[in-house]
Length: 499
Image 1 (cartoon, rainbow, N blue to C red):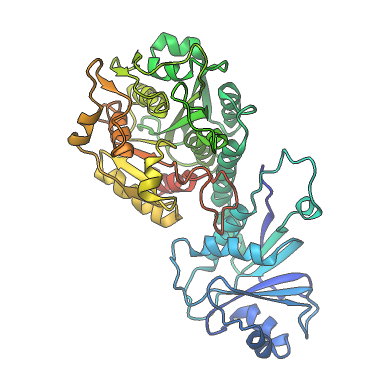
Image 2: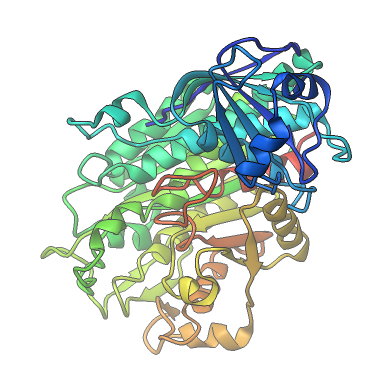
């Protein structure tokens, strides 16, 4: 449930009241109206020296009722000397600065970039606004008793960025705002409890995308049985909640262009099934649908910003429960592709869902490429921690583009190997394959399993177990559900696939 500041852009002026923020560098340099404002403050150098403020990147000097002005408070924010990653630094700055300003009704930020930092003020303004929006998100809809500080919020209710090219900034903000909305949607879905957000309800919420001209089709269990999604249905057969597949289509490109396709794992709760998980931290398994949440958020973003691309989003929604009808280790199921799968471990369920959905997507839509996202394996946390998502791909160009998009957005990926030697580990004595290859290389053998369902289509698998839920909080994410992947994939589309 987003708790966002109202974002505005206005022509440069010299604020005379309220809470104002200005930008400086590690030499305490100022430009434009920021220099004029600082010039009004008596003994600013002494104030900075006494506070040991040097303009280091991410630092701030807060001056209540600054002498020589009628301001309520002045926040001087340090940018250092541009030593951060230029691709992501302004977004990060926007989040940091909102945190330094703190709770207030409104704030004004002078986008006067210090001399020597040769950055575009329009890009700086809209990126800072994006960072502020992302940081401000809060999910508290189930709290009935809130502390006063929670009622009033912990950030500014509105933020106005002042710069000369305010009209350009307003125009540039529109796609950024759509992106922030998409991330918020994904975060909301991941944060919801599983008794509220089960497969049928998830599908209904995804259908609301139709308001943005996204065509939405929901396949119920009867339809899934008819087409033969035996692997996906096997996962959900132990639950009272019916499984669903949701197909979302945004047609913003040329009529006959092949679409790009995004597939998400949507296990709305994962007990592990008969191979039940330990009780400790099982509550986190409400987030085992973070891949599907990302796809929904991404499709919203593409439609809201009118992306010039044809895109398909397909999500498989199931609940993995251990009742008397549940799938058992040793069972053999037939997937949509016709390939048979021996179930070794019912907690290796996400790949069964994705296998059917990947085959369905490539067969029906013949896309340019497929990217799937899934909180698939704990093993990827052992390999990469929570700093990177695991990237597996059968296509070097797609993998390279994803890596660069990750660098540009800060949603970083690290390419992992695929190899026939690993593929042999999932061969079965009784079926075409088994659903786990054992303990060693668990993330890789899971990816090898998925590769058997892409039918040669350019494809990438993102294992987001470390980044999609319970991820590391940072300057632009204070939420348990991070919405990871929306910015990454939107950037991939924007950079390479819009006509």
